[in-house]
Image (tube, rainbow, N blue to C red; front, side, top):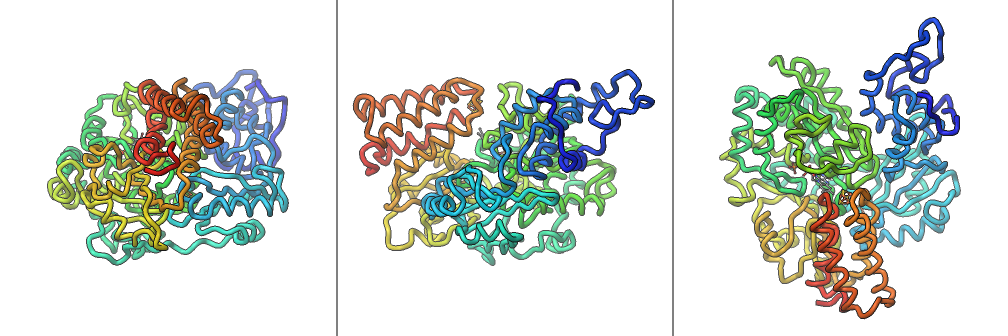
Length: 617
Ligand SMILES: Cc1cc2nc3c(=O)[nH]c(=O)nc-3n(C[C@H](O)[C@H](O)[C@H](O)COP(=O)(O)O)c2cc1C
Ligand code: SF4
Ligand code: FES
């Protein structure tokens, strides 16, 4: 590499941090000391060096984790090590919300001000942090700064924060029920590990995906096995790859990541794809505001996900599975890393899984704060070391996905369901739920309910029953609306509560289950403020690649701001018509689901809840 960012050099500490991920440099050509006798006059590396580009994101994490930001010197060094042009590496680093390319304090508190936290004390917490540390993003007192953050996936414990302290051993802690005193303490001392949250349904009969949670030591493979773990993989090995795919098809299991695609069809297509190798990707990016289900599964039952991934790899002919966990989930990443190492040592991953002669490995990758990286093709780009921009489809991932090879991508909850599919048989699994929505579903219940938390119910349970099970609206207040499916979902009214929670019934009322978000909102809520937050979320998170979404999300927010400030262009009616038109264009012409759904919650608030008439139906 001979292109540098103003000749800046990495510090010794930054080099060490990057080398810890990439290994030491082998020659002067990839950032090491130049030794004439070894390096000679010819460049070495070429294709081999470029093929390591998928290590760009881990290397950027290492540099940021060491000093709290990515300096020009560190970026230069990473570019040399991986033979990536600096402009491209800069484009990648600047794509992610958790990275900073400007010097900043080594300790940062990210305070969530997204939909749930802002109705549960998050805004007051932001005010307190501003008093203690100065304005958000300012240089900061006490060697620390704070930033406002989109949903941190800890909504059941709102208000939520994430403390990140850079150093030789970086510390990251997600903190629920956060207050300013606790956050300032966490900056001074080693933040305590939060106690495992207790499931509201703990001990209830009939739990399936959640049955082990709270009863299991998540760090112990023996405990997992004692509670039935790895029986499904053993059964899968008996069934053989085709037999497993058959059961998954028969189970009618639909994807739980939001798009509700039949899982068996994907598995079948990847298993039969002629090109090799095949890849498996587990989508654990979980960034939809209001969603925290995958976090609970990964933190509390990590071996279950590994076992399910191994079955998926076996059935579809993948030797490598990538597990992409959102950057804001440090505990999940830590527990999964431990589980991967343990499973490898015990012969449950590696060259000869369970002495059955099949090879399967899992690579853990961490996102760095980008909602769009949950979109499957954006996620592939992110793993490959490119900006997380969605690709045009077709080709679909089953034909050309990660590294342009046939790829099976599934959500965490989808994969964990496969354990029961294999153990009970596909038709056995399909007995639960409804014809079009089989099995159980995890719902992330938060906002104004007495007992927020993760709930598991069979498909077909009504929204009313789910909210009742969560204790209903506390404080004698009236339910104003429920945000169903997250920011990409829509608001439903109290009159719609009898809707059965299935893919088909929610579709029939113009809503969607999405990733299982249920945010209850009482009559104290300022709907316009929530709509503005949702609009700001999509404006921030749009990758900017296609015009309808890049411009539409900005125009949508501007129109809402004019309405909020009572400075409309023409009448409110004119602004409503403009919002409708913007929504239509985004839906029809955006490349991916982000743009296609960026107007849906706002439109539902306008049409169903009278948003523009003062928020009253
Ligand atoms: C903007 C956007 C964000 C998404 N985020 C996630 C996510 O965080 N987790 C997830 O599993 N799927 C997410 N998806 C859906 C994925 O593209 C994909 O459909 C899913 O991972 C497939 O897995 P499944 O079939 O098991 O649901 C997202 C889609 C879009 C358009
Ligand atoms: S719709 Fe939005 S997020 Fe999706 S590709 Fe276009 S600009 Fe990017
Ligand atoms: S953690 Fe704040 S909205 Fe989810």
